Image (cartoon, rainbow, N blue to C red; front, side, top):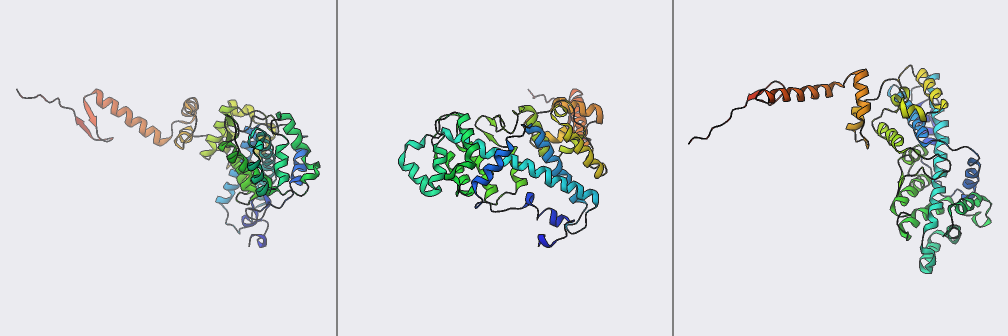
Length: 356
């Protein structure tokens, strides 16, 4: 049992703490979540790219610790400091992501055109309860500011006092699939966004999984981080770069060698945290990003400039150097009238002359 494991072991840290647990949150009261969400709006917006870097960096740091420790082996003081940082920092960033997804899904539901169809509305009421349906009906056809203020004040709404979080996320998930929307609003893309919070509430996702998925979510017009609340407007090229590098498992190296657009979006807090973690883990987060690998593993963008700088500073990765040499050899062989079968086998080309 994870709860019986010693707290200074990975078995406990990766199974028994809130960030990593799969818990059924369906019976949590919606108003209690809305109250916590209301407190968050007092804070400044944050850059989604920087948030993603922080989350992925700490996930990688813990993965680095896992490489050298069995589940029941005691962690060192340095390792425990890193793991505690992972839980506290990623946990807070996961809550911000959850609250953001709740808010933007509710705001988007105001575009649903089904509330003038009594049969559909009655069906929804039977399935999700009239209080949840009424909460959304209030904002149908309203501007986004009205929708936002209605959501902010939800924790003071007596009609919501007994509404469960599970009913709310179920309706948010359904309304984008079953509702009618004009072009560019609602629909399957938004259902996918809503499903991220539903999977958390249903216990399918842990908080860590939800925030990981959250940075990759997109609605009908691109990444979800363009609503002006909790997060600053995303920078498309930079966010995609972060996600491309994350896919290749090189976020620590991206941060430690951060230049250009990456250095620009990193806060001092992130830079100091990364340096501290690297020191605690004795330099294991250092290195450079192999942009050839980033592209090999399915990057969305191409990185010709980054590869050129990589070659200039670190040389070309071995297998790509071998491939480049083979291509060059083939070109030379072709120019000399040979066909290269392999790196060492050449066949002389002979022009056949048809007999008269």
